[in-house]
Length: 185
Image (cartoon, rainbow, N blue to C red):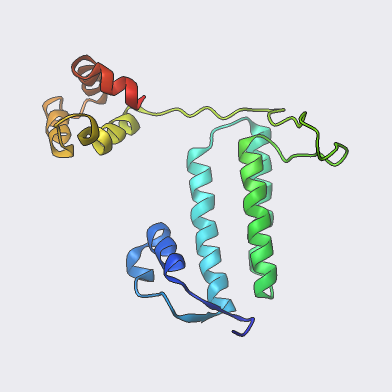
C-alpha cells in the first residue's frame, strides 16, 4: 500500500458512521482514500471532539485555558501535517495529551525512577460527574427494561403524565422504584 493512501477497514467505517453520521460513511469500508481526504476526516473528527469538550467540561479557568491551547495546537498540527505518519503521530500524541489534561494534568515523571510508585496523579483536580434531571431521565429510559417490566415507551408516557416536569418525574421514580434508582445512580 502506498504511504499517501489509507485503506478504510470496516472498523474505521463503523467508528466514523457512529461518530460523524451513518449517511456520510456507510459503505465506506474497503475503500482506499488519499491522505488529503483522510486529513479532512480527521479535521471533522477534531471539530466534533472540540465541540464535545466545550459542551461538557466545566472547570476552573486555568484548566479551560490549558484545554483550549491544546486543542488549538492539535488543530494546527492536523492542518499542517504533510504525511500520513505525521498526522497519525500528532493525532495519537494530542489525544493522549487531551486525556491527561482532562483527567488532571500532563504528567512530569522525568526525574522519577521507572519503579517509583509515588507518581502523583491528581495534583490539581479530580473528575466528578454531575447529571441534570434530564440526563438522569435519559438513563432511566435507556436502562429501565433491565430492571423492571417497564419499557422506554412506559417512561415517555409517565413523563407525559407529569407534563414533562423532570423534578416530579424523578421524585415519582425514586418513590416507586427506589432500588432501581439506587442501582442507576
